[in-house]
Image (cartoon, rainbow, N blue to C red):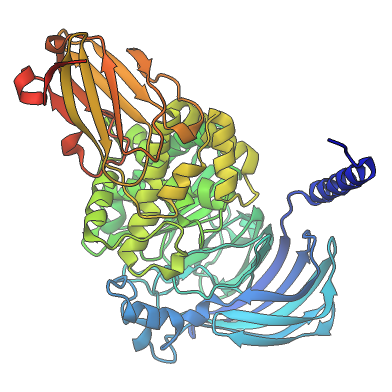
Length: 628
């Protein structure tokens, strides 16, 4: 064959140039720096604010528009959040029809009074919870712009994380309270309207000044800059401040965060605790009989941080605040809001510890990794749920064989309803609230436990640390996570997420027969449902010894390490197209007590009744004897 050298070199030059351009662009993310000052009127529950935002366009794109989230506008009758809640078959009881019933002085709102770009006034349009802004001049790649804004807000009655006068008596839970720049990434602008689901925003530095009546105590994201002026927390050092009547400004700074939350109450007390080689912990709560367990919470929180830091990576800031507020548990950078009451009453100590651990785990998967929760909620809620189950085992000195057993049971029951939807569903668009919560939390957590079954727990755990080290503060997506785990394990894993995330196909494997042969036994297996998996099979002899028979899935392109101290045999690859599989063992039939698929329970097999065969006698368990 003859080659046209000129054409080939031209083609290779083009490929080389394309690769260089791609590498030059590489990874990028936008950045924001906020300076926000508000003057808060606790009598009207309203506030006025000024915001200076420096926006860094680190993308390769020229931007002609920007967008802000105006979350408080969702708390108005007939809003998208209101209608969505009232038309779901299983609305969240914390929302229900409550928004529809708000009066004018009970609704929430954010109003932009003025907005300019480097001094030039901008035209803008409010689309409920999104502010659409046409720029006076485009922001070029690598350039930055300064936006100055004046705004007004009204705090709604406390409904779904945010608001005033919570059902347990917290005055203000101030989440999603300021006009917040939307995220722009390789997928473009993320301007999803707020209907009470998830959040996604660029990292930046925040300077927030809150001027409020002096008798309020404020807890917030970030580090308080003027504690001596405030006096709060310094009384033991001889600082005496009159906290009645007048206003005072609380000044906070937070570096490299993607949100800012605060809460205020006249009756808050603060306690602190130090995590060895970790953050200073601050606890804000209203003292009394209902919150008596909060006095015990610091020691458990220290243990939680110690465990999570060791297993999942170093915490990224110097402080963390656990704040009584909201209507459940909700994570924010450097802080969480935790309601002390549930619908069933005041939280028990174990309930309080459990929700605290879950929210602390979010500091990793929402606070520092911050995957786009709208598209990958299972990578935040699910990974946090996985981490919190193991952390609870450590903190509460449990020794559960399978820490996620209850999550598997919930998933199995949900599959039986027929209402399951793929994890790839946008978090706002699940047909049912239960579909979202069971998918994102339970099935998302199972994704990691089952991954340990596929690649080995040691690889999975090392991969989670590697994932943190490579992607902290970079907004990774599913592909970034898959590639980390593939590099860690040396196995191909795309097939797993194609099924587990993009479909609702389920796993069901069965041992269909064990037949005695002249040389030993023949074992027949069948895949009854569509999702393929590698198979761990344990053959237990009557003398108590065990043999592991491992069947790799062909599309894995390899095998996991032996996770047991037992002898292991590796069978031929099982092709995903083949529903049946057979193999032979040179073990006398009479020597075998039982054969079981996945005794660890990590594979989410929806019908385990066909996973075990106990060999009492050849006649009871074989279809024929002495076959070759």
